[in-house]
Image (tube, rainbow, N blue to C red; front, side):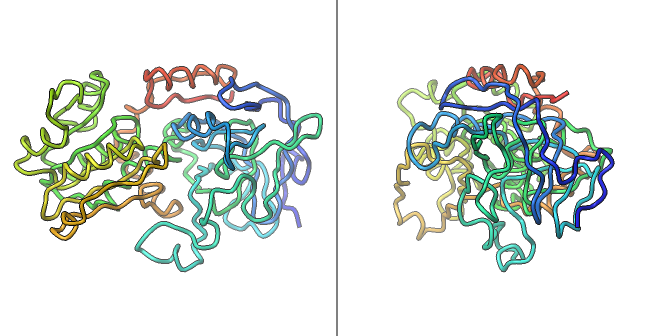
Length: 387
């Protein structure tokens, strides 16, 4: 039975006037009027307040061939919004709740969700689905009736979206919307990788390959854990000044290393290599350098970047025998429903720097400007306001 809805839209199709549709790979998004179906069982319909652009959006936006090249599509997976209506069997959320959608499912019922060893979900987390996770159908249609594909179970580049409850976290309505948006993916990924996956201790040395939003969030997590040395590696020299706000204490631009490899420079300034190394770009060659930068007997390398060319990671297994380890993670190893509220509280207690990640803000009509800023390397996070 449908629950009460003050706006009178529960159970009805919403004619949504603001959706940024990508019709072809790499092309500018087009603001269109679309139809958004009501939520089915275990789903909620969300009115998006603001969203932001992540590198993953851009990566999939560029893909022109293969199973992930699905168009027309509504991208976006970092956002915050308000519940407009709920479907059957939904008890966790109600109309008016402020929520953060996340791409990583957290059902809290399966063996994986109950385990503290990782943040996977054995029921909903096996693969990246193009539509809704339970029935494999879309809740979006164009005005001519064509199906519009979802993205990472969120699709936040739309005034209204429908999301399964396993992909949503409730958050206090007092929390600033633009800061809540950051917790939806990138910043949580970086801080989580530093805290939960690496579990950095006070006095540790850290190297971070790639100082985008995720890499800087790793630095923020390392800073809060009391790392003694945080080395940032990036081709953009300007990232050092930005990185200092998040705890980066040393900076290496690979183009200035001469004939030396970055890993050799890092070993020199850390007396043998860092305790923890993070790769936040998605290139096998950098993953190898990150591994080689870690200390021989106990160095731990955490891979956060999705390898762009499906290239295998070449590792000398002898170094594994000596004690080095390498691991990877999605969403920083965080369990969204329990860990995002913790990060939110730490921000409210002025422990975490979220403000520094927001470098630009635009209106939804100017969403393509956010793409330009990210592609030009000028922004960390650009907040895209719906209203």
